[in-house]
Length: 402
Image 1 (cartoon, rainbow, N blue to C red):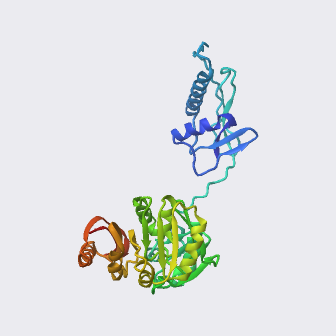
Image 2: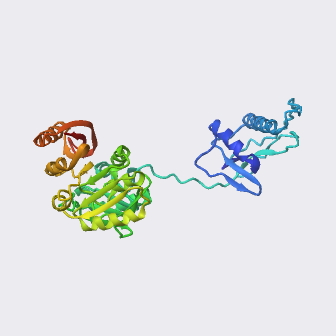
Image 3: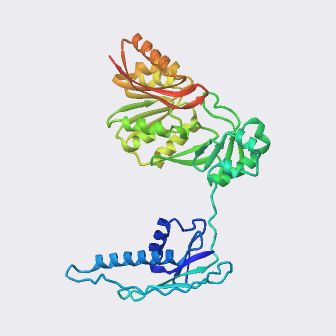
């Protein structure tokens, strides 16, 4: 490999010059050896180009020297440089080309730069996608059929592999493991099911351990991907809600899961959050997550059905909320009556549903609020993520007043 040999103290300056001139070979690593550096270059470099590099180096050194001198010091900037060039034009051999450019005496700085052949380590190019990782392992049609989107939760990757590629799932799993550098690959075996909102998963490769810690916006969330619901694709939505909260609020998360909404909110706000979920494993992890994170606010995990909890505690004790989070898009509409009955005057409900738009959700909120003689002001609407063709996971932020 043709390289430019330079003393180590000038290697960074020369590297930057070579990058500016776009002649550095980025697919090889720079070698340092015996107080010299060897910088790979793309093509054979001629003497004139090398002289230009050295002149630029000298100018940089001169600028640095000027910056370090006292203002009362007179600096002679008229520098004469004699250049002697001996070029071996036979570049097809593995011997040194022995092109030496002597910088001469430059304000007590002496160096030599030369073109030499050197064995350098090639930089391994990391694939830019799973599809690229699978080239040569699957056919072009199989790669096209594969859904290359996936969820990364902590050290775990969850894939969706179509039926016609089930025979190739281990090849796909290994490629995903290599590409993502995570510890375990699982495959979806079902949709999200039941009141516990869990899905069946199959371990494909890597460590067979469904427990992990997911990091999101400075928070740590511990969970078992096979026994609780968690979507990393809601990270932006959780941050959006957390940024709206003000200190002193009393908040209800009706379907809190392992606590991602409450944790993100309580991390930076002095609030009181009641976090309810019917899944006892989710509540177990929520309690662990409260301990894992340094929180300004208070979170109270509550195991049970929200209807029963509301009747036995919130309604009985006349607890009202400044903000209610309803992230259960499949059935949240069945709990709107309860939410509107529990909201404080000028409180905000974050209502989620699966829909092709916002009109039906807004109409539903207004119709139920009217039964309570309450008014609705729609503060915001947002498509959180796609759920199926033509359908979206949407959210409506509604301010309720009376």
